[in-house]
Length: 455
Image (cartoon, rainbow, N blue to C red; front, top):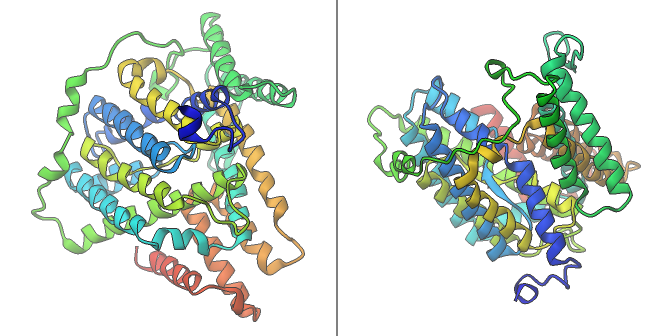
């Protein structure tokens, strides 16, 4: 049955490979179960009920990931997007003063617009209009981006007032940041060695082994809990979730009070969600599918329309449950790195998100330094896509380079695409190579410029 539905043999994979890869993707994404309730529940932001957001996060991730598996048969997992949840909480609800019910309605409407666009050729046309070299730049940029996320999660890279980022001070923060960084580096070397030796599940083994070493470090007193500064106990909790909390957020987007909400400001919020979600999703699909070898000879992704539709459905459903925009996660690349090629891996990942509702405290105990080796190593696998760019042709290579460079530095996939598209059009037009630019690329470049000017 699994072979018939997911076409495992045709995609050169097995049930074992897909299951391990699905678990790996979930492990690298599990941090969202802790981060999303923290952001949306922040008293200076949207101030939502944290337990309700946790349940909504699990349900939205389950529905979206399962839709991706059943509609598109791709190993891409979905969850409330990072960046979008911060914008939801601190900008829309915090700075602009809107209620979280109004913000959820904006997300719900955005999802409906996406559903319409996904049923037409608009989003598919955008995906196909992006030149091959930019797609390679996107894939490499995402590799650098998730590696940077991993370096941050491991506390190897920390903030610095003079240089923006710097290396961690091992000695000064040995029992918190220092030991986390060391454990992440050990996990990275372990993952790399296992991968080079051809051990199946090497990335997943690296995550679990790093977490286990962390628990041993805590037991030995090397790692010290400092909850006030974000260093929590590494031991999983056995308490269960309060399921009744979902009633606090479920369907509340339809109860939004729009009195005092300016129509122009609401449209700006809606368009901001729309722009970031659209190009984050397209960027992730390009990057992950390119690395997995899923693009055809014309650099197009087969079954792109149902993949985009699954993403759109997840956004609206997530808003009904009570969470910010649900989108395709770049951490899906960790599963692809483990060999995932079909929706079976997504079924496993989605099932674990559903299971996480019951055992959320256990999954949320997975520390950032344990998933960091997976992200850093998968970043290495993805950045190799830049080798396929012809650097002898600067008009093609420079936009791909700028796209790759921008993603980690501005901390956004969509912004990296924007810079890549604008620079590609500008450079080729000025250099007299405008014939190879499609009309849609001109439109995209203009829209991105308008976004910077007006939004």
